[in-house]
Image (tube, rainbow, N blue to C red):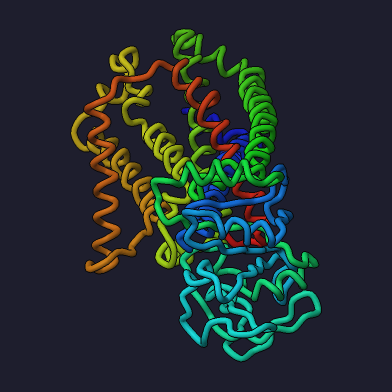
Length: 465
């Protein structure tokens, strides 16, 4: 009855589901990209073993930070400092991509040592470049080739791998070449400081802050979260999310109101044949629930697609095998998907179709034998379906050590199915108003935030996350 009512107005149903999907996908992707940005930038600053990171104060974009080299020399002379490394980076156009990250390091300083050379050799002279393995792949460059950056040619001396996506998708040149290329003579963007005694990090951090003006000093692991780039991104994401929630709420309300106004004759017939008011109301509520959760699941899947840049299941799994499972890049997306999947399969605590007032005349008491079994087979097939989607999109699908692929996907699906059964025996049922408040007041705003942040960062990075 519910599906027939929705399919009767196919265009409106599709548009409503699409609107919810896009909204939830925006929230999922936004959160994932913001978290990925923090994780990647933190990896850049900590891979080299730096304890303290120094950047220009009150700069809106980290790539615009400039600090005089004299500051680095004076910091290196302070008691308790082991070494200081300067770094300069910017985004420039390159063959095959309009957004290409180029890092400048002094080959004699410690920070460049975390670039593991897999082909060729390290930087030894100017006008040389190291390419990340990801960049070398899509640019089809090898050792000895020429890389042109802003009308300047560099010879590819080696190919490196660090495990940090931003670095593996970019290039490294000497600090002096970077200063010339970015027109920042005798300046660096960041200083990465290694201390002799880690117990004195806070003390040295305060000393550096008071000794120099116009710089911001923080622990390397905390730098990205406190940067103005991240704060501005999160503010924009929240603004877009609130707008999307407002528009989505209007669309959903319009769909339900039109559903009632256009079906007055149908509702009158149902009342005439004995349906009570609460039963008619419950039918319309179930339609709204079905639309909400279908749209939510589709939106979360769209967030994963934005991050991976492909609709191919094989490529999504392969990307997770090469890097990390997407549950680490999209923890919020996975949490939202899990809640939506439980609700979509009508499992506790969202098993409202089996609520007490429905049990007397519901399908559980109207059928027996094989027909009764078919309802439960359909329910558990639904559970296995959403478990398979979760295992594929967030946990690497059939990829895993030691065991063959089919065994791994079976193990992951079994774990998810166990969680469904475990929750059914553990959690009390929500009321309808609580469920709708959770869906529209919590899940949808978070989903919109996640997707918009993901989309923005994917665009900024030229499709690479």
